[in-house]
Length: 51
Image (tube, rainbow, N blue to C red; front, side, top):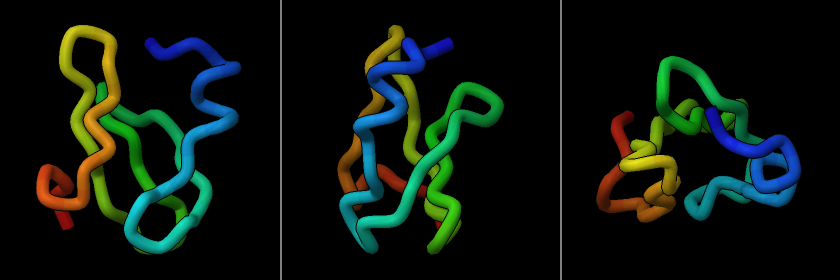
């Protein structure tokens, strides 16, 4: 689980939408891209996102 403070400053790099944490992934509430979390570090790269 990510720190709430970190999660509050993250945004989706693709559409600049807000994100939330779900099932060990960061999910954009706007475009629905899912970014992986590896060893507690969110990988916020568009190329790594699932659609």
